[in-house]
Image 1 (cartoon, one colour):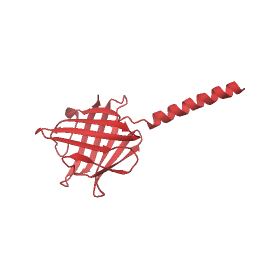
Image 2 (cartoon, helix red, strand yellow; image 1 turned 135 degrees about the vertical axis):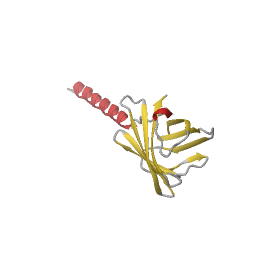
Image 3 (spheres, one colour; image 1 turned 90 degrees about the horizontal axis):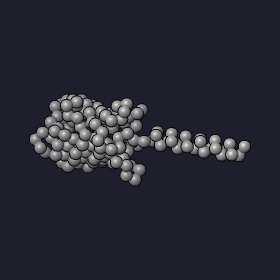
Image 4 (spheres, helix red, strand yellow; image 1 turned 45 degrees about the vertical axis):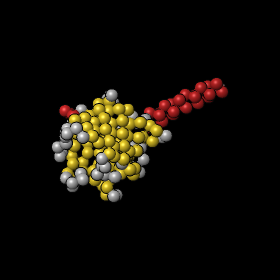
Length: 158
């Protein structure tokens, strides 16, 4: 009886740990390249390319984005993308027009709210293809000029 109980306990523990690990995994982790041809920007954006890197660091999800615009200028943005609903600062060169982002998990994806001085500018929803190889970011709101923003960016996992 004790052997059966011990085996059953180990089985339940393995199921619990496996379930927790998969439930808490972050499908964003890794490097993603923008597919410019599949993406749509409104207002029109002039991106040549973009690479997004998501890494776990001390329990946080650190995000680093490198963008090259069609004029050859570059922008780098980094932020804490941990899905805890707390505002985290953007670190950007040149300066980004939003100053904080909060990220929360929603279903199988994520929602990020970018703000300037506490005021919501735009919301970005992250969704994933069934095979986990395509990340789609849908952004709606306003930009620094107060223009309406409605973009869909498609990334492929590297």
